[in-house]
Image (tube, rainbow, N blue to C red; front, side, top):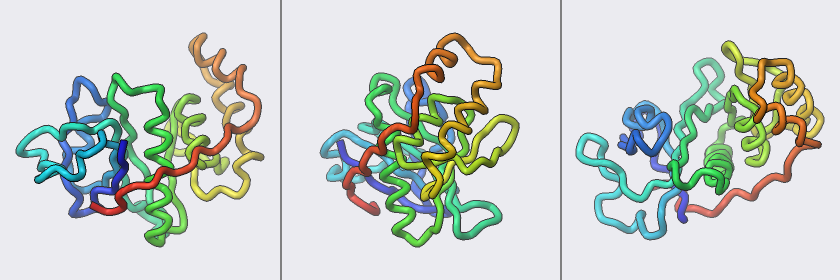
Length: 195
C-alpha cells in the first residue's frame, strides 16, 4: 500500500470513486478540496494516474481523505471526509491515512490540522491517528479534534463522556464501556509526498 497527497485546493485533482464501495464518494469529485489517498502498490507509477474524474474512475484506491483550509483561521486546515473501500474497512487504513495527511499538512506550515467527528468509532480512530479532543463542539453533534493537541490524554475521557450522554445503540454503548484511556498513536506511514 502506498500513500500520497494528490494536491491542494483550489486546483486539486478530481477523483471519481465507486459510490457503491466508498462512503462520501461524491465529495471527492470536486477540485475545491485537497486529497490524500492510500492506493494499491504500483498505482503511482501508472501513466495518467490519477485520472480526471470526468474521464474515468480512479482504480486502486483503498482510502481517501479530503481537506481544505479553515474558513476563518488561515493557520488551520480541516480534514473533511474520510472514506475506506468497503472490503478494506477495519484494517486501520483510514487511521494511517489521516496520520499521513496530518504529518504532510503540518510540514507544509499549517499550525493545526482539525477534524470534527460525530460518533465514538471515528473519535477513537482519530485518536489513534494522533488527534486529540479540544473540548469544543461544532455543528449539531460533532466534537472538534486537532493535531497537535497538548492535552490529548487528559481530554480523551471528556469526549467519551459526551458520547455517553447521547442516545446510543447497544454496539456503541459496549464500545464506549470497553474504552480505558487513549489508544496508542499509530505512526504516520511514509509516502510519495506530493503527486
